[in-house]
Amino acid sequence: MARTSVLIICLYLVVPQHASSKILEPGDTLAERAAQCSTTFCMPGRYEFRFLNTSNYALDAQGTEHGVNNLGIQRLRVRPRLVINSNAFIEAEADLMTGRVFGDQSNNNPDLNLSDPGNRQAFSEPQATDLRQLYLSWRLPFGLFRLGQQTSNYGLGLIANNGDDEAHDVFDDPVMGDIVERALFATKPLKAFMKGDFADAFIVGGGFDVVLRDDNANLIKGDMAMQGVVSVMYKSKELELGIYSAFRDQEDEDGDTLDAQAYDLFFKWKIPFEKMHAVLSVAAEVAYLRAHTDRVRMEQAKSGVDVEGIGVAIQANFELIDLGLETRLEAGYATGDNNRNDSIVRQFKFDPGYHVGMILFQEVMARVSAHTVTLASDPTISGQPPKGVELVASDGSITNAIYVNPVIRWKSKFGLNIDLGFLAAWSAADFVDPWMSALNGGYNYNYLGQDAAKSHFLGSEIDAGVSYSHTVANAVTFKAGVMGGYFMPGGAFGAPDGGKSLANVTKIRTALDVSW
Image (cartoon, rainbow, N blue to C red; front, side, top):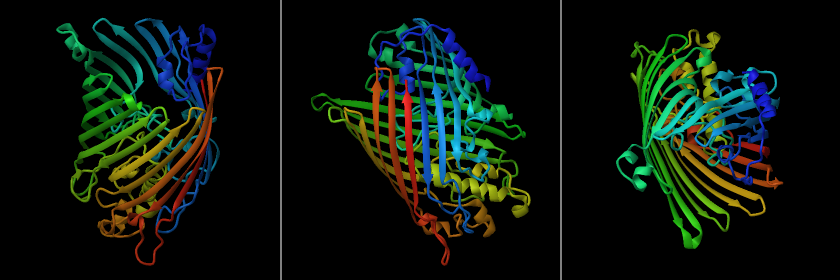
């Protein structure tokens, strides 16, 4: 992986470059700028620097604090595209010098929170360089063929997420992403029999993957996960409607297996109001996961467990274009599991690349669950760790949760942006800490020792941000901003009588971006 940066830099130097005819807009995502490449070679990119300040809070009943108070991180992402002809191109994407520049580091195992860029050094670790994509795209008379390393994404990103949704992640940066070695073919089969808009919008696609990295497998570490994916979609300018299915067969490095099927229904409808110069967008995704794995073994499930979970996300956006005003309302649901003593796991995890808010899921839930695994895996405390205990770590995922997340955004014509958001969340089932539950005879307790049935309210969060962007010579955009979040824990984070509940948590993120 260390050779990736050298390869891309050399390619940039030796291939003739021509400025794109498209003027750079501050709101364009990196993927959009790469797609707009109208010349032989383009290499849009973005450099990000973040300084994060987070208040301390306890990770267990003994008052152990997370200790990651001040952190400076960076990421340099480039997306070169080489256009072969009007029907074919080669595209790559890589993160370079990505990770911690200075600041505190968590005491938890970094493998338990891979989505935290502070867990790797930006200049001295191989993981700081990440080749995300390198594939050939070839448009044929009867369809589209893609071959190579690609990020995987479908719908809103509940189960397949490329970690690159800049438009959705208002108060946090998209990170990680599912990466697969994929052969993909998509076609419009009805065009052979009929003409018209419906035939042009009806798409059938299928592919075969070897998973390089996602929240369930890592090929480099020895996990072998193969899967077939099939999707059927209607995609027009105003309406997208489709179903996606994935069938996985996986064997981990230690011999554990996972057989899984995922079914995902997605739609998105854009309704223009031309007289108002406004657009209403409504989107929803429902994902169902069914699996069997022997990663987890218990007395009552010696051959493994079955997995059944459902995740739902609904988004509604209303944008007044002339005023630059946008209002968003999002709600989501991920099933939980009140009975942890049977052979069925009902808890659903959104892909860790899907974010809402700034603190609750990505910060508090991620660190608390990782600390639980650390305690349960310590042989001096627990002896032999339970089989599959590492799966307790949420890695920042939305899991066992019901949430609502309204957001208001104002984007001025002179570069000033103001964002305001609110998040309220409840656990779908009891908010249970497996380690504390084991210490209390298997009954449902939270990580501070409180009866988990006492409250399902996880808490509320207020997020706000202001930023300013300016484009120079229609080619380079500079953006600077600051965001802050304030999380007020609910009763689910309470402690028993005489104990100390989770304190309010604050987080400030100072950001500097340079895009070209």
